[in-house]
Image (cartoon, rainbow, N blue to C red; front, top):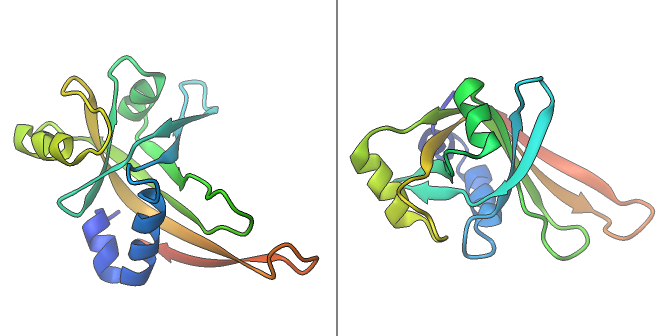
Length: 153
C-alpha cells in the first residue's frame, strides 16, 4: 500500500480527479465503509482531510467506525455524488492506520476544513486500489460507465 502522495506521483491525473471530487464542496466529503466486528459492512459520511499530500480522516473516538478501523483497518472511501446525472465518481480502498505523532496530528487538524476537534482519532488512509468512473451517453439508452483503475505495486 502507498500514501496519497505516492499514489499521486504514480498516477497524477487520477489523483487530481480524485482530490477534486473529494473536495468538490470545499470541505472534504465522502462515504467511509468499514468492517463491523460481525463482518458486515458499515457506511458513514466523513470529512476527509488532505494534509501534507497525505489523506486522513478524523473520527470521534466513541464512533463505531473508529472501533472498526482500530480493530480491522480495511476501508473503502467513495466521493459524494454530484447533483447532476452522469456525474463522475471516485473510489479508493486500502487500510487505515492511527496517527499518533502530535506534529502530524496538529497539521491534519490545521488543514481540516470542517469543525474538527483535537479529541478525534486521526487515521491516515493508505491506498491499495483506486477507481475513477465517468459516464458516456448520459441520459440515453446507451448510457454506460467508463472506469480508470489503479493498484498499488
